[in-house]
Length: 230
Image 1 (cartoon, rainbow, N blue to C red):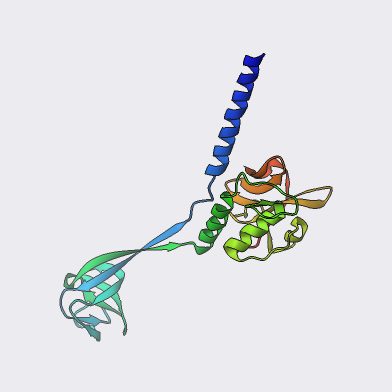
Image 2 (cartoon, rainbow, N blue to C red):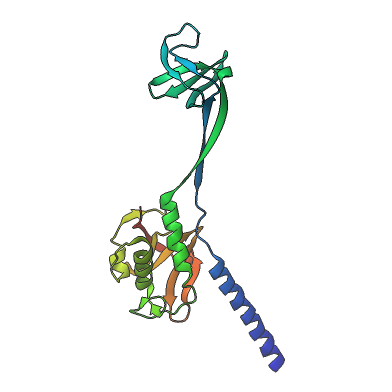
């Protein structure tokens, strides 16, 4: 009997460890970085920028050696269409060296949402305390979402799941993004709120037994999704 009990307890311990590792390793959705490449022409000698792609075209302006112009259209019949302060015009393609410049643009909204979720994740394993307001000492479901969103996004929420469900903008499950609020209820009344992480997961102060955990968003049937972030 003792050996069997030890084996069962060992299995439970292993499952608990795996569960905790899963929870603490959960991450918010990756940030989307948009990249764009622009082509520029750096002049190798002084040139005349012309209104048409021919030597007899009217001169828009004279450009100096070393000046850089954005290329609007690639080389065609030996000419480049470029943008200069005075307007658009043409220069001979053999008078310039082409340079590509790549720029990255981060989705600021997605970055803020990732910060919300990453901040919340540090409290996984914390205590559930009914009426609690600080996840470091113990917190309930609405106290947790209220604390995290105030600290990360300066969003003010009431300490009530029902009240929080009336804030922000209602979204569908398909529209939900990391940092949105997920509400659960019973008999037509909202009684629980969680923070959506993305990828079908939520983080929430669940019960006194489980504390702050990460679960599947469908561990109960959600009744409402709300966005209070941009």
